[in-house]
Every structure is written in C-alpha cells, then in structure tokens.
Length: 532
Image (cartoon, rainbow, N blue to C red):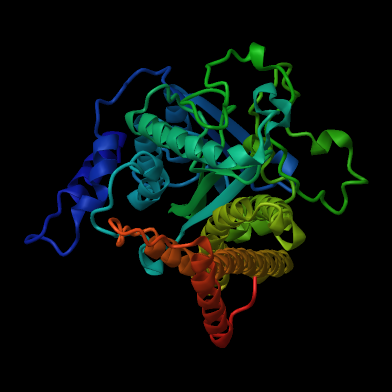
C-alpha cells in the first residue's frame, strides 16, 4: 500500500454518513483533510523520525541499530528496509523495531508510516487533536470506549519552568498572578490558533497541550506521548509519537516565552528556563562509565527553552533488557512510562509546595489569593487524576489483553524474559497507583483548604454584618435621645400664639423635654436596651 492509497482509505472512512453506514465518518473528516492536502513530493521535505532496530544476535541495548530520517527520501529508504516490496510485509534482516516521531510531522510523513505499518488512523487522529482543539465539540465522541482504543496508549509529560532566570519576570508579585494567568490563557488560545493554521510550524517543532502557572515563580507545560504497536509480517513495530521535539523557543509563540519575540538560537545561550525531569539513575549507574549515561554530545548553544525529555528518542532502550524486548512489545514502552511517572511526581511536588504556601496560617494573610490559587491547582489535579486512572487501566489491561508477543519456544531465556516483563509492568503499576493515591491526597487537602477559605470568608462576612448591626444599634440608642428633643423643639417652635402677648418661657421647654426624655429612656430600658 502506497502513501497515496493510505490517504485515500482514510478519506473513504470519512465519507461514511448517516443512512448508508452504521459508522460516523465525521470522526475522520479533519484527519482526512489533513492527510489529503496537496502532497509535497520534495525529497528534502524535513521529518524527524528515529528508528531503533534489534539484530537477532543483539545482547545489549548499545548494539541496537539506530536509523535517523531527516527527510522524505531517507524515510522512503526506511520503508524499503522494513517492508521490502516482495508481495508481503516482513522484517527481512531485523528483529522488532521502535519508530520515534518527535514534534510536529508533515502529512507526507504520516501517510508513509501509516502505509508502511498499516497504522490505525485513530492513532494519528488522537495525537493530532492539538490541530483541532480550537473547534467546538460536535459529536462528543471523546473519550471513546476502551475497546476502540486498544493498542493505543497516551502518556502525559510535565516540564516545570522557572521564571527566576528571566529578568522580565523577576518582579512578579502574587497580586498579579491572576493577571498572569489570564494573559497565559489568551496566549494559549492564540498558540492553538497558530497550530490549527500551521503558522511557523516546521517538522520536529515541539507541541504544548497545556500551560499552568502554579505560583509567582514556577509554571509547567503539558505534552503528550502517543504509542501503538503494529504487527508487520511476523514481527512487531512500536510507533511512538512525542510532542517533545526542538527547543520551545522556536515555532509558534506561547506564554512560556515572556519576551514574545522570535530569537535566534545563538542569542538564547543562557541557562534553560525549564528544569530537567528528575529520573532515578539505574541501580548499576555507579559502576557504569559516564559515557554510557550520556545520550548525546553537549549542545554548544543550548536554547533558553531546551527540555531534557527531548533526548528520549536518542537514549531510548539503554535500561531495557533486549531479550525481554524481543518477547514482549508492551515492555518496549517501559522507559516512556517511567519518564511520565517521574515528571508527574515532580509536578506533584511543586503543587504540594504551592498548596503548603496557601494553607494553614498562610491562608489568613490573603484569603482571596489562597482560594484562587487552590482552585487553580485543584483543576490541574482533577485532570491529572483522570490521566492516571487511564494509565493504570492500560497497565492492568496489558497483562490480560493480547499484545504482540514472541514466545521464544519456551526456553529459559523466554521464561526469564516474560518474568522481567511482568515485573516491569508490576513496578509501573506500583508507581502509578502511588501517584494516583498521592494526587487524591493532595486534591483532598486542596479541597479542604478551599473549604477553610470559604468558611473564613463566611465568618469574616458575618463579623462585618455583626459590626454593622452594632453601629445601627448605637444609632438606635441615639435616636431615643434625639427624637424626643426634636419633637419638643418642633412643637414649641410652632407659632400658634402669633398675635397674643403670652410668651412661652424657656423653662417650659425644659419642663416638658426632661420628663419626655425620661419616658423615652424608660421605654428603652424596658425593651432591653443599654444606657449610652
């Protein structure tokens, strides 16, 4: 099947309509339009694809064969290597393969890989949701049923950013945090619009799904990794598409670039705005040479927005057991799950620190700020909790469902490999369940903090109402004094005896006002009032 045939088949799926089919082709209309646009046949059209293949005699990850494709011509050679045109698909010289795509990829790359490995178009549709994120929902088809997404996995990667290194952000105050978040939402809306129009979007450029401002100093970006496994002949091929590609200083502008200017790579040579994802060293790291831990040569001009996870494709497989990798295709995703878990743990630590700053005694310093900050981070935790539930479901299902596996004839290596694969899955389940439990605890603490803020606000409002009532009560007491005097003054001030010579003496007013004032205070005392 050629790349043009693959695009035509996706178009055929998108043309299923009500009345002629039980399936809704509208699900694939956006993908069909994306894949079927004018095909660029230039051999030098850029792509960012890395393939790791395993030779039959390979014993260590370092001996994995690595093929890097930077243009369409090299991708076509990869197709001829993996899928020779001999009437059927097979991997003639290689064992299994892991294909990495980094960042945005042109449709010419997607159709070639889709035809090469017969990839389910739902895989592309789900990862390309960032292109159609600005469109309103119509079918409400997401999330779909688990059975519809079998063999398609999605992971979240968080990268924390620190604004301390940027002079324009150094003076940011907590009182301005709401304005910063509002501005970030506007910037992200513009960013998604540019993604939809594919403005300044080149192959390999990183994609950001969400931007979070946790406090006055730290923010985080959310990115996605989509994975699937396809059987090619008698071997399996794992396809991994990660949002993390080139330095985020390039491409459409987002809120992580406060200067809002497009800079050259050389002019951004300073400490990265992003913190590295903290992953645990392998147990034997102290015995391994330092060169084995290095994934690439150091960049002489590191960008201001370089992410450590961009090296996943180059480093992938160093901690995996190759014999187990041959036997179990799901085991090939172990390092990606570990990277996702590490990034989630790191952002949970940041959220917990932020919540600590907005709970307890700190709540009474600025209740409005605390409530807004807790509510904002609560939304992130709810979204993260849903993602962790999905990941745990997929990990648990991987032990029960039929992922492509090689049985290896039941020899000792096969049994040992299966045991390692199961142990790896159990370790991942332990990590993700711990992350889910911790997310729930932090979310509950956040909810309690919001309840305390609202209760404190209600108490403060009640206190203000009590103070206001006391002031009204004081006015009422004063009324018992001034109203009788005002009455007598008005009464004696009337000119009823204008033409007579009988003058009213001043003592008469006192003789009337004093008894009337005594009566007024007697009534006040009888009603339970207090003397002024």
